[in-house]
Image (cartoon, rainbow, N blue to C red; front, side, top):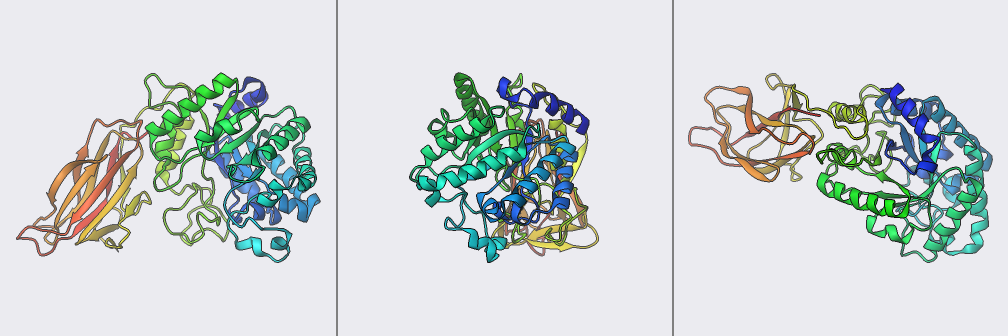
Length: 482
């Protein structure tokens, strides 16, 4: 698969700007696993980690990454900044990857961060840090220094094909004074310094596209709706607008657990919700690495990130570096990424057991579900509750779903919903003898091109013969996974 992507990326990257077609992009936003924020990425740049993790991206089937730069590391040490960026570009080349580089950013964090944040070490545990910050956006007298920063970025990239587009400003805050003139000025500057690559702006809200679409040569937007059909509708609206303007378009941020899963994103971006498939769109998911940024800082579910790192910052239960947080997500991405545009993967005929410990099952926030491990359950674990409680599982596209329960003399009554419909009302899990792997069918003949949701409700009730009202979840049995 890696060779396939290398050939496809190399062939398309050369003509990306001319063809205005980015549908080949299958990317991930990349924050190195050691980095809490966009400043630390380059201040504490770790060549060995970057080399390994970009290798993980290529091995996983991605052909592009999206990475955030920042002017503060450049102000702190311009020569080190440029050397590190050149190393990053060379590492992309060695892995047959290409990148979108984000030059400025309005995103959340301390808007007053300055060089003292680096000299005093405050950046190390900070969340995201806006670049260059509202004060410098508003003050045109500060722009010449930022022009030098942009010039050094472009010079470090040089003629390398490993960067295919510049994101001039990520998620601009349109309430800031001077924000549109700032974007206009620096988009024009980037295009002047490097006329071979397109410029774009990563819009947080697709409705704001009209504010910047005439200032850039390509369009991009973000979407975290968590619904395949809604995402597909937004994609088609954005594609129509881009076509009318004669510009390319790419979805630069998508997927955020627990509501916006890879299983919701992939059918939409590939056009596989439609028959025949609709035109695909290039995309970047959030995010590649399970690192220490603010989305993973306390290691409580839901984590953001797909791939485990080798860094000490990984969670204590980290698996083999380069392995995926979810094997089902890895298989799902591989299936979609392996087929050419305009075609969709075929459902599998195999059945897959998804244990109760899978991170896609979000247990009741009141803590009513208790984890148990020991001999008996299919994977050695289960979760149980004997009061009113809910547990929801977000599933990838599949054709058949069954809930795997423990039945026994202390078990009670539950309700089960599939995609919002009550499909198994008042299920009595009582049995005179223990059965660890009872499979309760919930649905068949489902769409394999759309994600599904299972909601289990422990009612806290039982029949007269049961000694308790435990609902004991072992997992799910899925068939027809993509």
